[in-house]
Image (cartoon, rainbow, N blue to C red):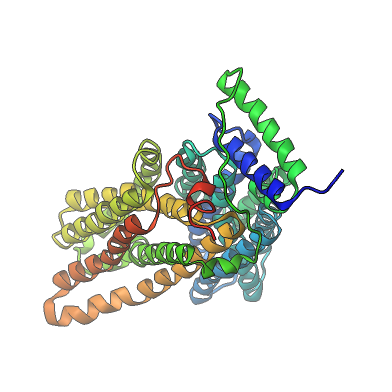
Length: 479
């Protein structure tokens, strides 16, 4: 039997992807969905709960000083960037599945190492390892999902994973606080141990998952890809109660397997990637100070008797983030991603933060709380998922993880810059224009660039709703 020609291979790959995109429903095994969802759950559980593990009640038992604990926390964030970029690159070179397993392993080993840490260097090393695992997971989970679900309702399918992650943000602190208060001497170790246990479970489940069909096809493993697609088709017919599936229409495009970084040589892709990176950069630039330093700032502008009230309400408003993620489900497939991103940035972050800051300065507690709810429901609850979709839907298969890793990894510098300067800028201006005016001005200005970039995305990114990934990339934007 003669070896198939390149044109035959290209045609087969186009057929396979078209067959997935015409499926009427998602047919990933529930175990795989849970393994992906728990990856996000662990990521957001870890981000918040390390603060509880190093709370004043338990810090004395860790052997760390407060300044050392602060550095340990920051090491996790430093780990995000190389974790995202390196593991994203390797996922494009060697496959999504092995790197998803490796991210779970890094998270598990890092969390277990922190649970067993007995000195400052151990905390530093294992926290960095955990950060690398989580940074990689945040990139690879959306990459895997968008490649393995049909084009119809792709945003809604990913939304299921996203909601699970925000559940980690909401439920994690409650669980960790109970553990910490029950026994502060060992509670901090148990908090890390919970994360490690979940990560090891995720690792085991992911080891039984399939590689994405698009990656198998790109690597020439067509027989394996064909087997997976046939099973998906049979499962879809059963799930949708159909005797026959809808017809499929393969696209005509050239399949490319090249070094992922060559994607930047394509002008169309380069413009998309850089635009998405800047939009996420400025989103983090405005979001992170609000999430991490609002309470520090508010202590300087509200009466001391009301400080605890603002602290409680700010924490309560966090529930709106989870509800916002659920609310996004009903419109994510009705409005272009770039338009929704701009709304999330403008209405949620800019308007929500402005209302919060203005009425905090006025000490109007109900109105300030309304602003917090708006900022969390639309600003935080929508923007993150839309950023993930923008970062993964608009680049070709051979560079999807690398491109998004670059966008999200570099964008985290926005958070590092803004959190370091915002309170200083407010303090510096307050001497000349007053603390109230300087606060409103600086907090508002920090939100404006993301809105501008959201508008730019409307002109740069194509409409991806219900569209094949190959149609908006390889067939139209590829070389």
